[in-house]
Image (cartoon, rainbow, N blue to C red):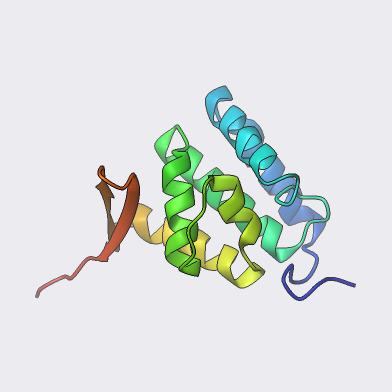
Length: 137
């Protein structure tokens, strides 16, 4: 039985694939993901492998794979944009996500990487915002 916030359990083959993708990340990305997991007090591990936890892992791995580093401020900002709440750390933001929020954060990462949206960094607040890209014909 899973809690509504966690979603369903995910099949082992998906978890194995994520673990392989994590193993392929550089050491700096792995270390940052571990730091974020510590900030979240264990609430983002893949044990048990729920939809929420898998969505979070996919987002972190996608950022690390694409950027070759993981910006904690970006992760925190993506959580804030999704929930409308403010977080002190990336781990606190991820820990607060529901399974639907986690999937949408991962989807936002995909939108950024596919250039469907543009990230803008605001130095004064140390936050990111996202703007939709408008394609004119």
